[in-house]
Amino acid sequence: MNTYTIRDLSQRFNVPSSTLRYYEDMGLLENVERTEHNQRIYTDEHIRRLEGINCFKRTGLPIAKIQEFYEYESNLDEHIDDIIHLVTDHENNIQARIAELQQELLHIQHKVRFYNGIKESIDSGSPKPVWEDF
Amino acid sequence: MNTYTIRDLSQRFNVPSSTLRYYEDMGLLENVERTEHNQRIYTDEHIRRLEGINCFKRTGLPIAKIQEFYEYESNLDEHIDDIIHLVTDHENNIQARIAELQQELLHIQHKVRFYNGIKESIDSGSPKPVWEDF
DNA sequence: TCTTGCCTTCAAGTGTACTTGAAGTGTTAG
DNA sequence: CTAACACTTCAAGTACACTTGAAGGCAAGA
Image (cartoon, rainbow over all chains, first blue to last red; front, side, top):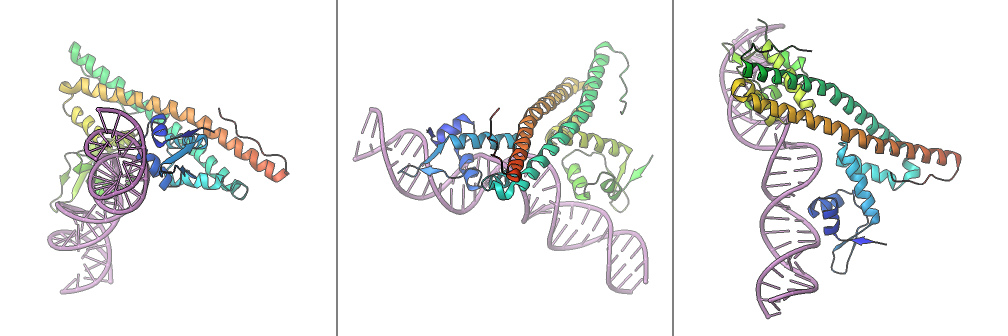
């Protein structure tokens, strides 16, 4: 089984080692063994765990919820409904967030077109476009 | 011209009045007149401004950038390139964010399916599904 | 051997975006 | 007229997710 130092993971995931220690304090990384000199030893388990954590983080799940998820994970039979609730809830949140962003993107694109119109009018000396709500 | 109290806007936009004062301190709301008793008077201009601010906020533009935007807005001829750069940049960020969320959504949906499979296996006593990366 | 450098812990600091509290003035209902 | 309530300012506090600093241990190279 492969093992990794804190430096290895820090480089692999492009996070400072302080963050990895912080995740451990927060209960996101568990069962981290130590060398005889008290240095952390990570395994492929931890690599997979960090990939999961990053996926959750990129989708905006707060640390406390990620912690909850792995707590349920470690006692799945008892918490299967909880974990399904958590991930389904998160799925819905992401879908709602995507829909909201797509809606707001239209407004931002409207602004981009508007200011490009203003620039053209400045360059050509023609009358400035008038802002129209939508 | 319509005028509004801090309470009016607070209710209309569902934010505490402290937040409206904070936006003013941060330079997002400008030219707020006062009554003879020093109470803030907002106009339809401020309503439009707040709609703009909220659009930017929902898309994750930080306060400092929003402030910059309205600074450019108030001197458009001199800052037309800056403002086009700012909104175009923001448009690209939103599109990248949507793409990222769509990608990660697939992973979360994979988890939802996986745990539903686990639940079925618990309920029926059949063997548990095995997690497969993708 | 000594210095460089990475490691450890624990506590305190940072940045963003508010939020709350204290102290004081003004307005309104009974 | 007075109590309750709304408003003001300014300063300090909160929440989240780290980030940095202090103090010290261990080990390999000059």
